[in-house]
Image (cartoon, rainbow, N blue to C red; front, side):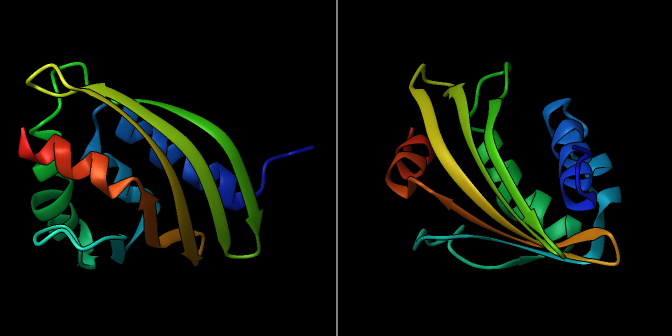
Length: 134
């Protein structure tokens, strides 16, 4: 069975991120993409809009607490329908202080014109907060 367009786009987006090409991942996203991690963190508990906002004010604020090996991602399941995908995955890393970071995520992705236009991220926010406090 062939992969859906949504799965192909997600895989290309994710592969770019996992290879360290954060900006390159956004070729698979609309210019007005939104990213919203669930939770009440004072800086990260909001909706981010567009590549620059997402990179500078969300992702880099998290990645600065991860060691130079980055996050190893294991996708466990992808379910797609017309214009939507749910992706369940694990992210494993070491914090710069040596803290083990092993989080489980679900991304709800919405698509427009064959590109990702929004991502809602569900994760263990207590574990994320511990990482950010180190």
